[in-house]
Length: 170
Image (cartoon, rainbow, N blue to C red; front, side, top):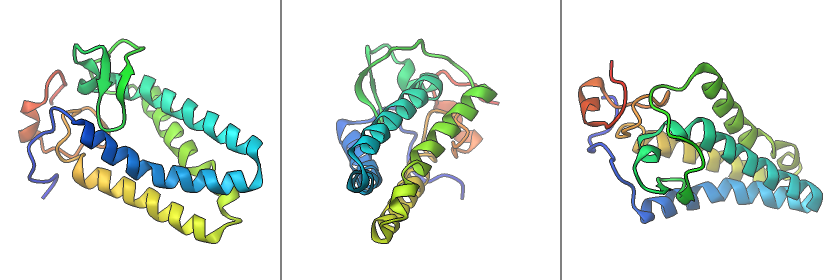
């Protein structure tokens, strides 16, 4: 079976936002603690890298999402809540450079702290497990019911995609 048996997720709640951000906080805080043990300068650099990567994802990935395209002034989705829409919504699939930049931002977020985590094997294990759990849980629980049918990770079967607003369905 591809996807799961849930209906398409047309709206997120503040509870969804809290859940996913608390899950994502585990690897971020684990990485931040390992980096802070070595250097406050590099902790500051890490925080700037995280902010830059989130901004890149927001610009190149999120602005294509139907949750972003709603008529509201702020975004309300599983990872962003109440963030102003700085960019124009864009319909259709991501262009190759948007996919590349989104992938690069995700990889930088995951790989940047590894240098410091290697000095802390316990934290490295927590980090790897937490990143894996976040990724697999997101894939299992969200990608099979997501209305962002042009997302490269979407797992909604074609026959169920008809209920997704404002997307290209082939």
